Image: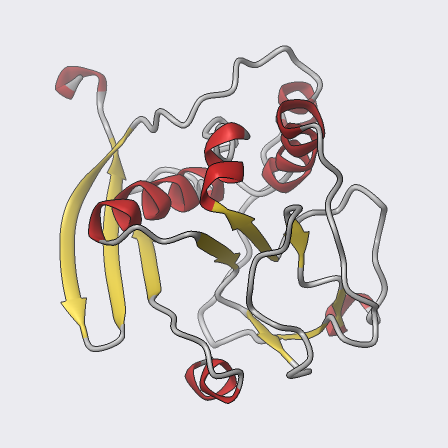
Length: 199
């Protein structure tokens, strides 16, 4: 990613957020924690939320924010470079800081794989009263990489019920920062879900 971003002549910071513990993966909470901790470091105006297993293929896919939240990973090789459905808003997305706050961040209730990105699509429509933007499919191509030992998260069996519920959106994250370390060019944040006894 560094070579790609340098070729775009961007001023950027990469923040890596890891989840620790035995809980199911919570992508939304990880993105929210990364956002909350990042704005403590610097007044960033643009955030690119990026799955770690996706690499952009075209330099014309500029890593910047537009006037509307942007879906950047429209065409992924695993899915034959096709948009699976119109409300898809996963993989790589771009938000201005104020838009992310107004949307109330990602949902924190999806433990396990699935639907947090669809939920975010509806937050943009409902809370921001904006549509998402996408560059043409020939520009927004990504390669999905898989490393040995990487396993996809288990599907959340309640993901559709949660998506269609009247869940009250909030940026409040029920996790705690357990470790923070700084390395050249990137930050790593490690979080763990709060237990009831620690609340």
